[in-house]
Figure 1 (tube, rainbow, N blue to C red):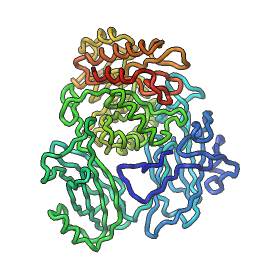
Figure 2 (figure 1 turned 135 degrees about the vertical axis):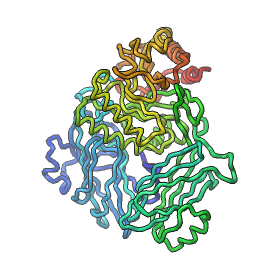
Figure 3 (figure 1 turned 45 degrees about the vertical axis):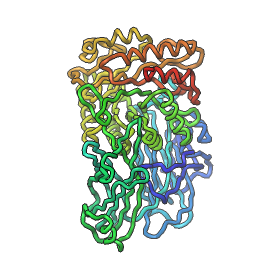
Figure 4 (figure 1 turned 180 degrees about the vertical axis):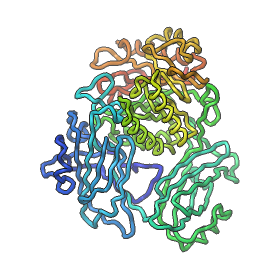
Length: 598
């Protein structure tokens, strides 16, 4: 079970995990709201273990048939402290959620891959409370669905759908005035971290913020900021005057994290940028402490210069593996925090310094452990498969929520908005689809100018900070021959995978880095399922093919990295280095040595 604090970058002590057993009902006729199930939940119901969806074994139901509407109910005791607010958080509900508390509508959300919060203070009573949630899903290809099938059976590389609550549900108690969000941007060249903070205030009152930054057990900086509105922006230096050479940067080799603690107080203000923080603290002894939040950040810079990707101003060669994040008994939901850690360790053991999280936005604790362990992450938007006005609106709204919610994680170094022309299948020549991708690129860069953005990973790029290519060629010699002349590929003089071109019509290569961001997909013969190309019979065949194609890619002098498909098997797709129950298929130490060029 996932029991750890669900949002490690904005952590409070007063919270309650609501994962576990809930009452559950299918509503195939979509009659529940009309019949008032939010007031009188059906007596004939079954039990489900949240956050696992009904399609999974860990839910206790394990039925894979598609049901368009499902309902949940949980009774719980709540005794809120006077003057406090109660926040009900949902890390992920697929796809359209509505929430009622004691029969009152408390809020809703559309989008499977971003979290949302309902302030339920006005609906909570001392003692017994009833929470009811409905989740409406569909088989529509207009909604972003990633690898979830839209047919009754699995096909190709699309798998069993995910319906309803699939990430942690939790309660949090806060004061009337509290820190709602914090955006942290590091600048290693100036040794400062910038903070953009949103404060939820019930009344127009001045606030003071104490911000302590630490590196391990050492206090680096103690600052006080005067806050006079709902928003605050400030910079803090991490250049410790007592240790001028000890600003630590984050990297896979040394994933150093700074702790930051925020203490929000209300009362009379103090002068901003007070030179003597201790005296400033003494001045506000009569202020009321209303919120304490723990967070962290890293001094990390990802940038591009010409055809090179730089991490902390040094060249970075990315050894990535494609990770779809599926488990046999829990599907898209990690079965436990230990399972999250195990997957990260398995990836690193195979010699990879990063992963491309494919068609899924992972549990935030996964990103937290990547931050801690130093594993690079490409964050990718799950695709829709029909291009129209509604689809563009749904995609855009959910994507910017995802970018905002995952911005602070230092492990996230790339945003990938589209994959292989999915949902924009005519982008090569269709101007509307091209303009849509340009808009998403610009919107993403407006919110986050520091990270690279990839538009249409694989081929037919419009504007993109990295030119990425997908090719499942089986032979290293053919790889080397096809890509030996960079000019032929990047300037659309030669097609590659299934007669695709590197850029869309009307666009040209601008000298950006090139990465082979999908290749491999080797599968063993003799089992049900498929991989890319011909299947191999022995471990020796597997290793020989893996070595041949990986070294061919590594030998391309213009290539800035690669991404092998994939970490584990996923349902009918059996091209993982590990089985779906995380057992190695081949000698992982040999894979590691090939990846590292040893």
